[in-house]
Image 1 (cartoon, rainbow, N blue to C red):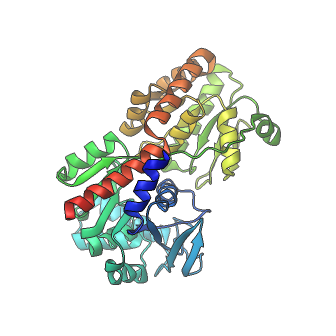
Image 2 (tube, rainbow, N blue to C red):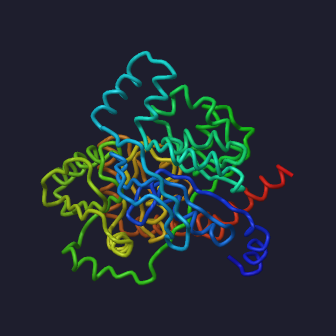
Image 3 (cartoon, rainbow, N blue to C red):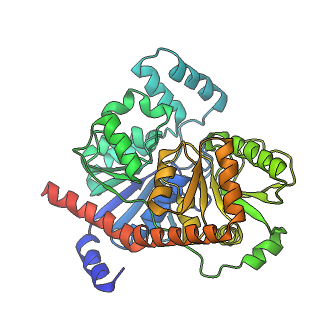
Length: 406
């Protein structure tokens, strides 16, 4: 960001105190919305007095208290952690979810579902309620969890919502009909997310912007080191939680069928924590959760990135791949991913196995096409997702809110 702009923004804004509210927060937490929140909070600390309000949970499946409750400093930010009242029993939650999404039920049932969804922290809600006057704004990340659903209404006159929403069963619950009209402003990740939520909740009158997130790339990329470290040469890449809900089961089926039919030597490398069984096959290599350095070394060493999820509000890994000039192949049943590929002209999409096979074969055999798409991706990220642009958009939205109030 240019120095004059930065200095003026710091002078104008630093007296403001802003709270970021999110269900999990920490260097060990690598979920999309949580990581997105941390990146934004750390950047906004240049301009505002920032606190983070979160729980003691690390694991999103159980919400078990693992961090120590209280205040800690993390990367220069004050993080206030509150214990979760009860862990999530995944079996009982799934059983209750089957009732909610498959049978007649009441709004009271839906509120109970949200409590079971978690993480429910009565001390966190009490802190938000009691400290309303302490903060100028509360920025809530992701609509789907208790921290936002129960916390935002206490401070709705100061609330900014980053919903990270997409077309999925929970968003059709009746409890969200009024919820999406509560915040003072909404920050959308993509045009598709904004269009979907405006159509669903008729909340076009709420102040908003489409912003997203910037990308941080390590300075020293070393592809040779990565290939030697993991004994990998010819591979395509998946980055993220290895989960059936992320489309991974279908990806494995498609990939193994593709290899069998085409006799390709390509391997599929997975970066992320598995929460499902991965096929025992030497051509599917799971490296687990790796460092940021290894992640970018892997991206730069790969032929392309695969993103099989049907449900995304913004794919940060697409932006990371494009920053590394790598093309992507995505699930075309996700309007957001398809939209990102269309706008960038940096990726292909599929809706069935035949399209998957044809697109993957084309990308693997045409090096010129890979290079062209990768270069388009880099230009797209530089144009719309540089940190300078993201920061300015956040600052402008908060300034607009201040002018609107005065």
